[in-house]
Image (cartoon, rainbow, N blue to C red):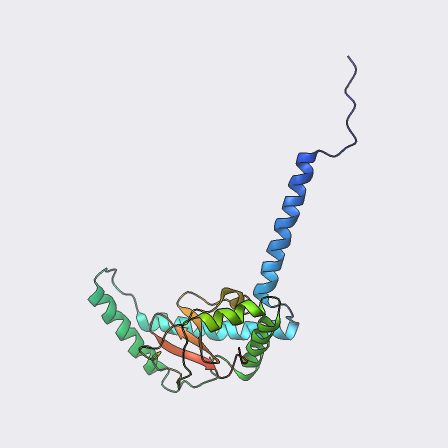
Length: 201
């Protein structure tokens, strides 16, 4: 019995699988590239690392202020613990000021990233999303103070967040007028902000 001659044509199933894998890898690379910023230079990477270090320091101090709370589902106890944590954080950051987290170089980096997102391929969608979201009128904001009661927490378009460094759980970016706010959702405090971070939308 003669051995079967192997076909010189590629297996169509394997070929489709290879194309599919290549497509997935391309999407993953694009996503990772978007997370780190499309034009990050070594200097930008240092700036992002500095920002991450400042954020980490804040989160650690907040966790320390919160102590070890006893597990509970009682809303009154949770509210009490949150209030106590907030008071301790505010006390420890009594001298906090704008720029403690968003230092000048960091703020400049964020402005560049936001401008790139708004002028990029998704810029039109981002602007439309910001215009159609519940409007948040520009109001005076102060670092280490509560996010104003009754002021809407406008959702930030995901495509805009792709150009910004990721935040640890409990911290989030918020847009108030043209300002970018670093908001602590655990204590409802304004950790820091960048005035006029967004150009006219």
